[in-house]
Length: 304
Ligand code: PLP
Ligand code: CA
Image 1: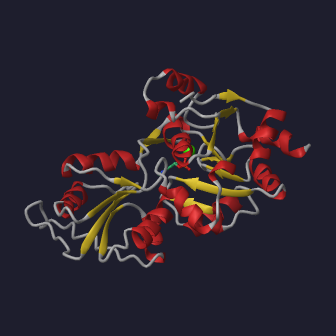
Image 2: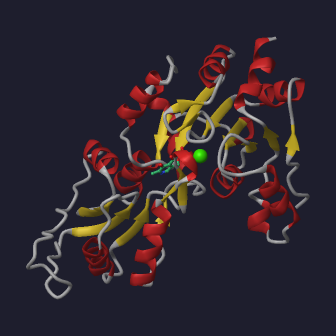
Image 3: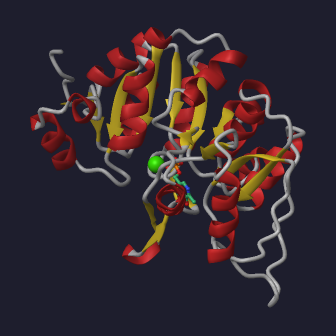
């Protein structure tokens, strides 16, 4: 493979890239917002892309909110024209996978958060009780529900040893599915702090169970398949814009999309150049076709 360009672009060069794309897929955190603040110009970029006839989708590994909650967040941050149907989160896609692909016949044990539980409920996927965490419960007498046919791990600020042990108990059965919402190792918080991501909890369970989780979120192809099953997308006419090389850009490469790194989030241009020097094909797939400082740079290209 010739390798990807990692080309820093602006102005008319951005216009050419956008002209070639009919569908634009945006990662959320680090691309269109950072926490509770919209990236400057992002609402206008989304509005103008739509006015130009582009189809716009939001593809987030953040499983903590159900879709309807994202609609509220978009609106709160000044995005006035984002519909629920355009938002694909790892929680929504995990529920879709369990219902439509795995067609799981039984309950799901969840290590996760209310966003995951709400999406499973909306998809009609039954969830197992969390189990009693009372003083009498120990690793010797963990209550295991015989109807559990899948374990789903996502971001869980109430992760406990007992949840880990219970999930491990279910995974002893080789027929029990093992899914992870996303592989993200950590996330930036305000003030230079970070929080551990779903990937760190999945790693604990992978070690304990000697099994590997099937990842639903980016960089797995499933999120693109989920969008494609509802909207007929031509990968060759689609652009993925993200801030994390090993999830967003690799996702784009895995799905045959053009890829763009924006520098308003986690990964830096130096990170991209370092991957470009690597011999490993998987690392090379994390190198974007294009780099922009911010999606605000689209404005000039769209306004003319
Ligand atoms: N998961 C959690 C819990 C997060 O807080 C974040 C970012 O804030 C993400 C995932 C990553 O989201 P995205 O894929 O939109 O960057
Ligand atoms: Ca991101």
